[in-house]
Structure formats: C-alpha cells, structure tokens
Image 1 (cartoon, rainbow, N blue to C red):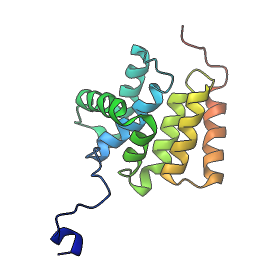
Image 2 (image 1 turned 90 degrees about the horizontal axis):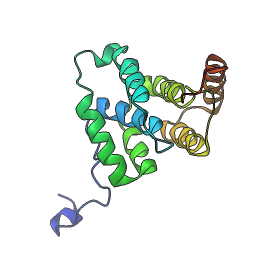
Image 3 (image 1 turned 90 degrees about the vertical axis):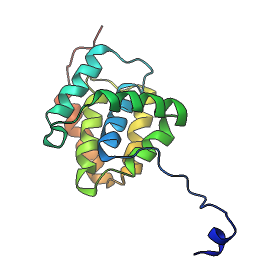
Image 4 (image 1 turned 135 degrees about the horizontal axis):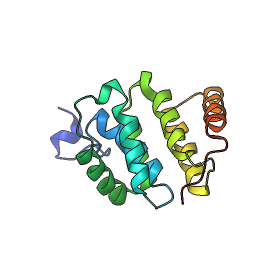
Length: 151
C-alpha cells in the first residue's frame, strides 16, 4: 500500500470513461462526423457501414456505442473525449483508425476549421509519425477529390 492510499488520497489521474476498444473506435469516428456540430443521417449510415465492414465489429451492436459517444462527447468536450478514446486504440490499429477518421472528415472533399483541428489532435493523440500522417492525408484527399457535397 502506498503512502497516499494509506491516508485515503486517490490517484490524480481520473479513470477513463471510455471502457472498451469498440467504444474508442466509435467515439473517435463519431467525433469526426460531429466535428462541424451537424450530424446527418447519411453520415451515421456511412459510419455504420464503415464499421460493419471491419471484421472486429462482427456481432457488435453499434447503436449503444453511438449513444454513449454522444453523452461522453457532450460531457467531456470534443478534445478530451478524443484523447480518452485514443488511449484505448491498439498500436496496430492507430493508422487504420486515423485513415478511417480522415475518410469520414473528407467525404465531402473539403475540410472546415473544426475538422482540421480534429485531424491535428487525432494525429498527436494517436502518436502517428508525421510522414505517415502526411501520406494518409494525401491518399484520402486524392480518393475523395471531386466528391459531391451533401445538400
């Protein structure tokens, strides 16, 4: 028992409110579709399709994860929430999650100020190498060049 435990003091680091890897993935991607403070049904449908295309999400009910994401993002604020989610992303999944996040943010072919902030925070929190970050951004921009903006 530590000296602080002996006197009833708790550790200064708060427990992470994000409790699973699935919540972390959904939380990051949800933060991306809500970066502009507008969430369209088509965006949530695209996000669901994207997640269900991943083997890791077979048999996972995403609806409650969306609900939790909404509440935690509101409670913590976007940047703290993204940071909490990034803590639970496995090393081998970090670049994939970053690429998926960019895919969602760049679906309309443009990036707003809030979306750029999310990309910067996400890149730092996931600790993705600057060179790799640039490559991923370049590829996703090329892939989404000329996309129609949703009305």
